Amino acid sequence: MSLLERIDKQRLPRHIAIIMDGNGRWAKEQGQDRLYGHFHGVESVRQIVEGCAELGIGYLTLYAFSTENWDRPAYEVNGLMELLIDTIRKEVDTLNKNNIKLHMIGDMQMLPESAQHELQEAMELTGANTGLNLIMALSYSSRWELVSAVKAIARDVKAGKVDPESVNPALLESYLCTSGIPDPELMIRTSGEYRISNFLLYQLAYAELYFTGTLWPDFRKENLYEAILDFQNRERRFGKTSEQIAEEPTSLISKDSMEGRF
Image 1 (cartoon, rainbow, N blue to C red):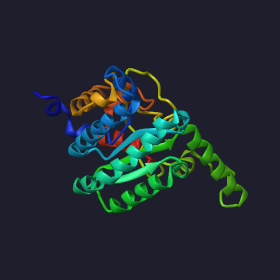
Image 2 (image 1 turned 120 degrees about the vertical axis):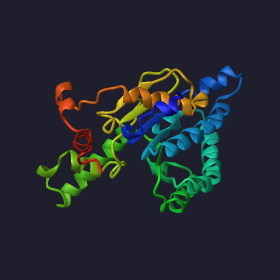
Image 3 (image 1 turned 30 degrees about the horizontal axis):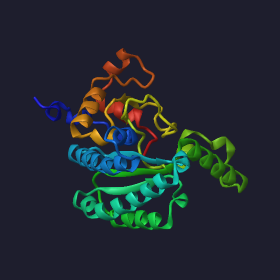
């Protein structure tokens, strides 16, 4: 039986988040510069987006560029931005063909105007699609997101729009970049690193973490299937005991665990 055939389609994670790591090391192994690795990493993005869409995954978030990545050498940053623009321009038709809706989280104002334009146009062109929600985390970091949310809440409290006593998890979540998006249930990081690296720190509170030594340019659908199978072999308790979970209907567990996340 293949890995795909072993996956229980009734127990898929609704939202998968991925830290796409290892492009630079992969390129070094090939005797090439880092941009060579980023270029080949695009094929992995295609494979995983396609794999998630085929399975019926609702949401896929890809950590493509962090706020800290702006400190990398200028040639690499500029090359990444050019690759981003070129890839988005080429992939819009494929996204529409596969009913995939594109979203972006992060500080868009930090991106070059050309990248902002391509992203905005792509999001508009795919806005009516109802299949996989593909969320690109660009110029994003969780600390930036949380600070921005706190500032926005403080402004609304000062303006009398928000009662400080009403501040709770649901209200905070409504100020995050991911407002309206369910929290990830599975987070995958490639390349053998065991860090979350400032990625969706609030949203990953109850996610299952999966780390693999595979470098991102080598990550394919089979690797995705392995991660999902690992996820399905875990017991998700959300603070309860195993006995409590065993007594509850699966549908009820799912509903309770995602309450307030939509």
